[in-house]
Structure formats: C-alpha cells, structure tokens
Image (cartoon, rainbow, N blue to C red):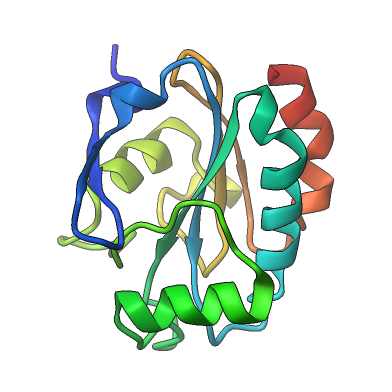
Amino acid sequence: MTTIADFKVTNNRGEEIDLAEKKGQVLLVVNTASKCGFTPQYDGLEELYQKYKDQGFEVLGFPCNQFGGQEPGNADEIEEFCKINFGVTFPLMEKVDVNGPDASPLFDWMKSEKKGLMGSTSIKWNFTKFLIDRDGNVVKRYGSTDKPAGITRDIEKLL
C-alpha cells in the first residue's frame, strides 16, 4: 500500500525531502500561487500551521504555475512574497505541475486517492488541499474555495 512516506520531494532550496520523515505528522499539502484570487488563503494556512505545529501538524506548500500563469516567480521571489505579505513560515517546496504528463508523482498519487468533484482526478485550480493522517494516508481533499479555517475540525480529529 502506498502512503505519503513513499515519496520524495524537493524544497524551494533544492534539497530533497524524504516524506517518510513526516510519518507520524498530520499534513496539509496545498498547491499554491502568488497571483491568484485565493492567495489570501496563505493567511489561513499559516494560522493553522501556527496553531497546530506543536501537536504534530505541518503545511506543505507547492507553488504551481499551471493555472493562469499565477505563479510566475522563481523560488526566492515566491518565498519573499509569501513571507512579506503573509508571514509564511511553513515549508515551501519547489514549483511543480499538479496535472498532465509532468505532474508531480506525489500529486498524481493524492489525486488518485481522493478524487475531486464528480470523480475527477485532475486539480481544477490553485489552493486545492489534501489532508494526510499520521499514517501517511490521504483522508480528505478540499477545493480552492474551501477556506483553511473550515478544515480545523478535520485536522483536530487527526491530532
């Protein structure tokens, strides 16, 4: 059985992260963008991270430029934008594709585990969120319009 622990990703500094190291934590994996109508969700994601990080919760942000070219910057520009405008301290990863032939294997797996509206496997827009339990399983998928504060109860159940 595949879990998030079977994947490696690269952070925005070019360092490989073995997600097996995250086993035992509750994770919220999000495809993000800096120039999107949903970009203010960075505030809510940071609030969740600050509120629950000491209980074994982490947000992993994956910038993505596939939707309207809304994440055009490089890793340094994205990190600076997130810190200055939203005080983001949760980990940011390298920019990835979430759909198509070059999609991140992690996102392909999460999409297959929890399909979207009407059984769709593709991600429709920025700020799609996947909640991962302590065993590394995808528990729930949230769309772009689902605000981070609305995920609180689901996170608390897993902590």
